[in-house]
Image (cartoon, rainbow, N blue to C red; front, side, top):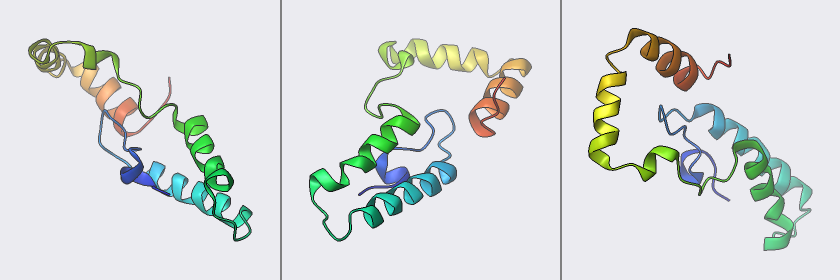
Length: 100
């Protein structure tokens, strides 16, 4: 069972992953203890289900991944010069994970 960064749970925007690492570790522990020593794939499937429920499909691609790299880089450079974007998106949403 992979947890945290090794499970691909670091936030894409910031790379931060302490919270999902702790949360996924707790989920893994819950599933392991409920397995009562039977560590089969079926018995441990609940862990993947919990991860998907909490974090969505980790294999899905982001919208920006469909754009050409040069366009993504140019948009990023432009957005990072805007005070509002840096404060609201980068700091509050991506790093602090604050909701609206």
